[in-house]
Length: 251
Image 1 (cartoon, rainbow, N blue to C red):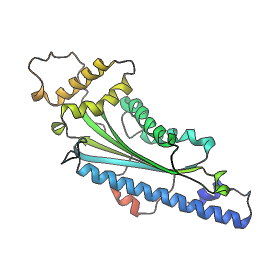
Image 2: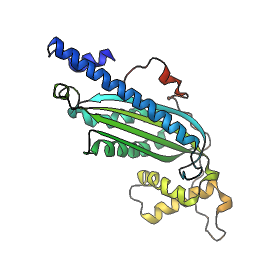
Image 3: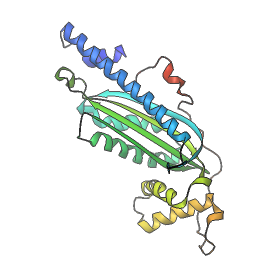
């Protein structure tokens, strides 16, 4: 962390001012790391209770892994934040679904950094994608805080933290309406020119593949390509929250 703050501050300030700015940046980066830990544990807890009681989000059968990022940046490179998040997605989802996930998560990031209200903002969203014959739930949490110090603003405008979880959905416990409300975002991201009727049809066809016993008897069978066999194995991520209790390396 010291290396990061030194690189951001540079050698263009007096010793006392440089030390003060470095201390502030250290505190902000530590806050970002704490936020990453908070969101990781919050999403983990929410997933364990998903689909129960008043929680109508997709219930899961298992949590596979998660990744996180903490960044400090200035306004002239703020557009690169989406690239940082997109790089984290690579290897976290399979190649065929990377484009759709990137589109949706980048939209979440744009919402977060497009907010002009207050010095601190956050966003928590989730989406679903199909990989092979598995329905995957991706939970995203993002946080950012604006820097108010005049001495620091030329070096760092905002500090941000992102967490992305990957879980397997228990489709037997998902209702049709709940599935359509969530999965339509993925269908739209994959088929930008599809109209509302087409989106609805794709959602229904996929849902009934997982739950054929719920398919209406008078519903015509759709002609769709067979699902690929095999389950994607994420190549990066963390399987345990213990990573936050060890020495962390700031990105």
